[in-house]
Length: 342
Ligand code: AMP
Ligand code: MG
Figure 1: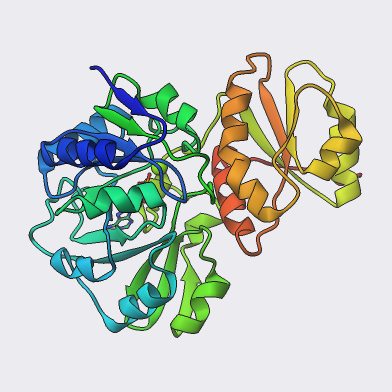
Figure 2: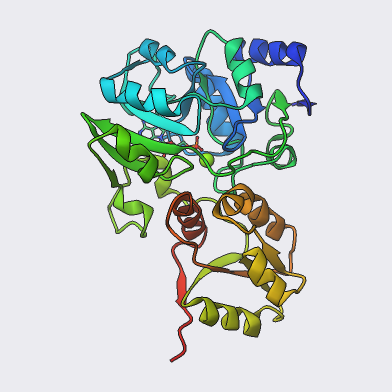
């Protein structure tokens, strides 16, 4: 399939993209979280094409992208808590799970009676949605299991030849996928951590609890509340191992390891400066830098074929750090090495 790539979309190319979606085609586009792979969310055939382009299991539901919070009325049963969250965080990186209306095909929701809705904030995504009179179902635009794409070149790497069009929009500002919550009256459950943190959600509800699968591996037979979280995710080709210990212990472990054959290190800018070395990669100085560059770093390690093992200090879990920890822990299959001196 020929894929039209537009690095800097204008009104005309965005109108073309909307037409392609309307006719059952697939268009990858930027959002503030990661790049999405869009199709018509009311069309079962488009959903099937998305699953096939990503190589994604079809029980893994898609998020409907809308141009406004009110548009959710057409596709789902809303509630007062939904509107409290919408007033505070939409447009933005928050996805809410609601009971679906019959117009949404089960193909889009992976067979569930609920549907995920989000109103993205990125200007290209908003311009595209403004042209569509249907919701755009869009999972991340990566091959299933690979790190999510945060730059145009990542989308081209995974999706060229598999979709009708790719729209560019620079590096994604946030870099990790949206926060997902489900609502029970005034109570929220966090199904996937993201840039909207539990601390930020708390003033708009009675309580926020975390799906336990966010911080530990699933036990046999257990299923997470967000079906996608059960799959191996975000993984580079090399094995990832998280390092647990004090700052000094972790640094001295990395000092002993980083020059060894096959070893890569993913750490903070400060740690990188005291190590140096070809396969030592920094993902930034602040938590938000780590979120923005995490997936690009994991993809970069894939281009370094000699790297077979990646050590990364275990991230902090406050603020957006919980999202970084969750993605990295999943990339590592929750493998943690305690580097405390015996
Ligand atoms: P992605 O589109 O790649 O960001 O993945 C979307 C994720 O949202 C899925 O993998 C699910 O984990 C979650 N999700 C979407 N719809 C639902 C739903 N109806 N109920 C629970 N989780 C959902
Ligand atoms: Mg994804």
